[in-house]
Image 1: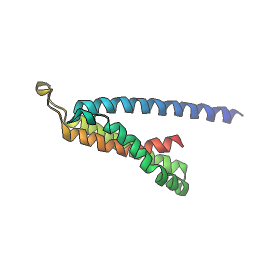
Image 2: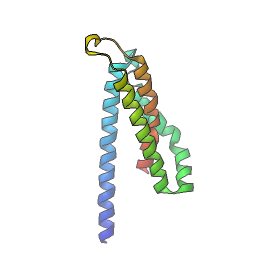
Image 3: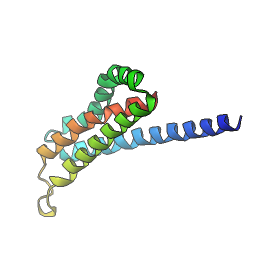
Image 4: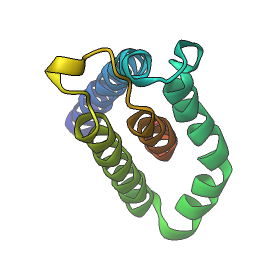
Length: 129
């Protein structure tokens, strides 16, 4: 029974971290999208890309996890999350406007952020299962 309690605690902590991750990702991507988007109507496209990436990878990752196992499947999801987050953050930081021209938008940076958030979708799928 002791192992059961430990597993429940670990799973509860992981679920809590997942919910915090989703909240931060949605908030930060919307704010970064608004700051960087060439058209403010596209500000939430990075958030949409995150959920589209999750939807597009649900079935393929389920089949992959069935074939190679859960641990390897979680590792694949973590690798996608790290790659997507790193490239997205690089897109935000690398092309940000200088202080003197703060009104200049950086559309290249915005497209990098929006497209790479799509890559983080598999992370969402592998953690929820």
